[in-house]
Amino acid sequence: MSEKITESIKSFADAFEMFRSEGRSLSVAFENDRLTEIRQGESSGVSVRAVKSGNIGFSYSSKADEAEHVAKSAARVAPFGKPYSFQFAAGQKATEKLPYDENCENLPVEQLVELGNKVKDVIKSVDKEAMAECSFSGGVSRTRIVTSAGQDCEERGSSFNYFVGAKLSQEGNFVQTYRYRSSNARIADKEILDAAKIAGEDLVIARNVAPLAEGKYRVLFTPSAVSDLILPLGTSLNGLNIEKKTSRFVTAMGEKLFDERVTLTDDPFLPEGPGSSLYDGEGVVTRRRNLIDKGVIKGFTHSLSTAKACGHDATGNASRGVSSIPQPAMHNIVMGAGDKSHADLLKLAEGGLLVDQLLGTFTSNFLAGQVSGNISLGFPLKNGKRTGRVKNCALNLNMFEVFKTGIVPISKHRQWQGNMLLPWVVLEAVPISAR
Image (cartoon, rainbow, N blue to C red; front, side, top):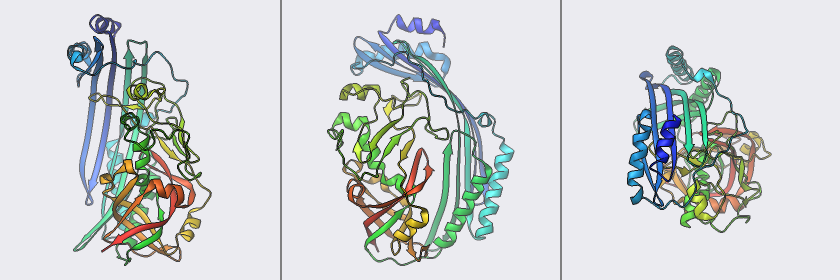
């Protein structure tokens, strides 16, 4: 991105922000025991937000060398855009450092195909009737942001993801178990194969259906299920909903709304975190922040626009792609750990239920705190062990209430679920419907 282009933009725009991105990726996928896809790709693009006569326009292209043309298009539509009510990021440099894994630059196709076959063998060794599926993807990216306010920052990133699953499809009895993780570094084969074995072992137990009567139960939620439970928190802390005043937390800054064991941190600097970054999508330097500290609301996630509208400071939480306008989002969501072992949690949930996977929670009213969905993988607990899986069961709870008065313990150990580092949590008196 040359000085010539930025000087040219200044001649026809009152202010501007230019975002440029390029990347390279590889993905390998297996389904029903067979290799189904090998895909390599390269992407690049440029987008510009330009200000003219007090309004802001946006334009983008998938061709990174069309920056000047894109900028002129953005300036041309600016008079019809929204008022430019905030200021683009000013010059500031990050002081933190993040790792970059060169192993993600040229992932070997042959090794990933071989790994997929090993995953299949591991799952078959646990349950020979299981159908195996898995996928691996990774790559590298580079972004650069230049603004008329003096920011010029560049960041490169690496990524790797895996998914391993086992499924059984019989008449009237379909069940699937899986494990996955994302990281900014190549994940070791051993972890992936261990995850495949766990998925297979889960399937062995889940093959058998265990009856469960409708009622209220003490439930042990795994990190996978906890990732669904905390969705109302992310939604209600999002600057868009603070600006629109649709969140219950609009006037809750400094209030204790949850159990003191509930701490939620947005951490962009975790070395293994898939959401780690030094700059957000607008070039604002990121920072580690407690959004909820010992049950007390401490902050929100903002883009420059929502921060200005709410009278708050910028938080470095803008997320974007080349073709999208920045919106607030968290980096790595970290829930505070407790003091109980996994064995302790199993004892405390005795006679209740372990819930690992939920289905359909996206239809819940998150702004009201509601989380409802089918239990796609849940196990009754007896003598500290899982006894088959429940079928045709669902739950419906208000997490604003249960995270205030319904927490029994929280585990010491935490596990990654996408960009969330979460513990196991036992909740009291969770209503379960069954048919």
